[in-house]
Amino acid sequence: MHVQSYLFFDGRCEEAIEFYKKTIGATVEMMMRFKESPEQPSADNAESGCGGADPDKIMHASLRIGDTAVMASDGWAKGNPEFKGFSLAINARDKAEANRLFGALSEGGQVSQPLIETFFSPAFGMVVDKFGVNWMVVVEQAAAKADAA
Image (cartoon, rainbow, N blue to C red; front, side, top):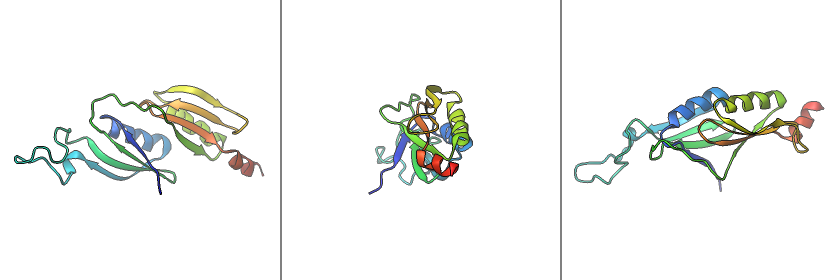
């Protein structure tokens, strides 16, 4: 069994993809716009495909962030994405990388927990990025100990 995150950016998917490419090194593995769907509405079947969707919006994308695939879409593209009840956690190799990732994700967003040293990590912080996605940036204690050795 494999569980993956699927984020619906409600019309801002392409902007989000570009932001994640620039800030955290995401790479696009696959991207399909609604107009590229093999199931297009037709005169005899207006219900088929994704009728009513902006043809230039992203129907489906798969991003690679480190070793993880994250899927994304514009969804219904109403312009108001909501990400509630979860966070994406990103593990940094060390404090320097944590500072870089945290700063980049904070750009245009809102810090909910500044990056600090805790009992479980030499660097941990939480931020809501400019798209409303909750992120936790953390250096795992084991990684920090290995770097110190």
